[in-house]
Amino acid sequence: MSASPSRAPVDLLRVPGLGRFLRWKHARTTLQVPFLLLAALVVFDGLTGPADAPRNAAGVLPWIHARGFVALALLVAGNLFCLACPFMLPRRLAKKLFPADRLWPAWLRGKWLAVALVVLFFWVYEAWDLWASPWLTAWLVVGYFLAAFVVDAFFRGAAFCKHVCPIGQFNFVNGLVSPAEVAVRDPGRVRVVRDEGLHHGALRAGRGVATATGRRRRAGGAGTARAERL
Ligand code: SF4
Image (cartoon, rainbow, N blue to C red; front, side, top):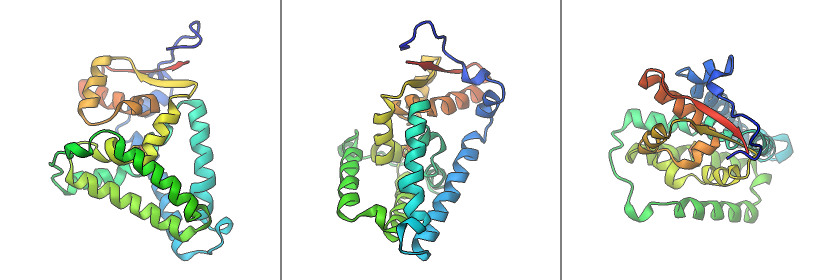
């Protein structure tokens, strides 16, 4: 896995400060809430602010700053966006409020729907000049939160992440060329994570750290995660 065999993997859970943070029960929520607030700002400014995109948070934050963050994160450690993804919060809320006990329909399984949505997004982006319309951008963000909530209110597991989310699929694919990878140390725990509905791309994407940490907590402290430079 390592392009530089002489370089030892780093156990992130043993890095002072970072390891403690990753083991903390609320670590992901702490990362997600600031992005939720930024999303709220995008929606608010997009719906009520200036129509001129460069002067509106909905024209600048998602299409310029967020892209820069994702690109930098990919260069450092892979798809870190999923680690801090604010769409996880409505998903979690939906699971609390609704039974979410239906199986995802067999004909919708796999990645084809997410891939189709990525293609559709690119088309809409170009055809409707999304970057130039704070109003449309705001509604796109609202629609994304609603979709995450509705899908996970009805269906078991991480249906939205696994089968629907175009951002996740797009970042997972880009994460494959990242020079660094976050991976779990114990393959047995990877299997458990998959059973919980999270998908393999997340393990390359930084969520491996969080999920491995979660299992570690529940399992009484045996699991660890590591990062390897490729
Ligand atoms: S797959 Fe989508 S919804 Fe799930 S964590 Fe990643 S970006 Fe967020």
